[in-house]
Image (cartoon, rainbow, N blue to C red):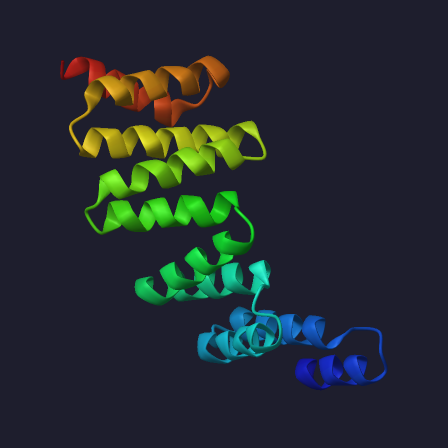
Length: 169
């Protein structure tokens, strides 16, 4: 069985303690055994509290379970160690979901600056514009969308949202 093989690999030294826990967590997550998967990440964090990946993976599992408060805590802990696109994008999404678009704006701005590729930067820009719209700031939203489209003319969500903004003016 998979867990026995992971344990045997750890003892025979092809993989280390942390990697064994990650593999076990991935195994449990693939079977939708989220509590067990989270337990593996808790074990990692008990020994390596600055493990960004363990915080991000925990947050991802918690978001899948709609456990927003605990996911948010892991995301905030992760950015204390390392700023990541994923963490800031999710923190922004949580803020919007909780009806707080003004809190989402700096998160999406940070996500846009951390985007590793055009797709990530475009997505974060789109979400930033959406947050501005939720606050009633149509001019800021339009400016952000125009910047997104200048960099990525084919990004249809931004093009569609900009068309909707312009049609309501």
